[in-house]
Every structure is written in structure tokens, then in C-alpha cells.
Image (cartoon, rainbow, N blue to C red; front, side, top):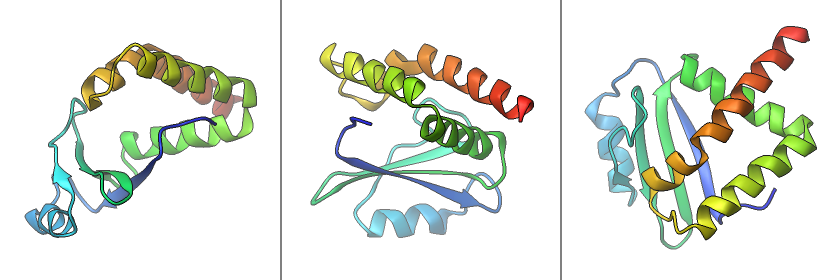
Amino acid sequence: MHAKPIVDIMLGLDSFPAPPAVSDRLCSLGYEALGEAGVPGRLYFGKRRPTAFNVQAVSFDSPLWKNNLLVRDFLATHPAEARRYADEKQRAFQAGHRRLLAYSTAKASTMAVLLAAAQRCKQLA
């Protein structure tokens, strides 16, 4: 799937909010703490140099954890949906949505449709 050259990492926490040591450690590694970044129950961190990374810290086995993995697995097994998502990402980028919240908002309706499809697919399995 065509995507920005950013590595996305999901960090599973024993509980949320994360203890301050989690943020302190990520910041000591060069990550910028961005708070929940529009998603309650998530802490978001970004690092852009020399390689770009996004880290989202959520409670392990929470709905956010499960939904992220569900959509990831769904896209990996449904190439047409992966293309649809890639096209939406490209449209958001071409429309000038370069900042995290604007980019996420531009893709939100597509993400909701993909999550619903992934959930239906899981129920049928």
C-alpha cells in the first residue's frame, strides 16, 4: 500500500493513562509528546529525524488496541479495501492535510467504514 515514509508503532500499556516514565523514556529517545491527538485513550508521540516514526500508546487489549489490529489484518487480506484506504490517504495528502489532526480528520469517515467492514468480516469468520 502506498503510504508516507513513516513507521507506525502501537505500544500496549498495562493501564491508561501511562505512567510518566513511558513519556519520559520516549521523549529521551527524541520523540515529541503530542497528547491524545484527538483520540481519547491514546497517547501519541512523533519523531521525524533521521527516520520518521509515530508511536501510539494505548491500553493493551482495549478497544483501541483491538480495532487497530482488526483493521490492519483486514487490510492485509482485502486488497480492494487496502487500495480504497490508500486512495483516501493520497486524497487527504493532496488536499493539503499535512498536520496530524487534519490528516486524521480527512480520513475519519473512510476509517469508520473500514472498521465496520472489518468487524462484520470477523463476525462471519
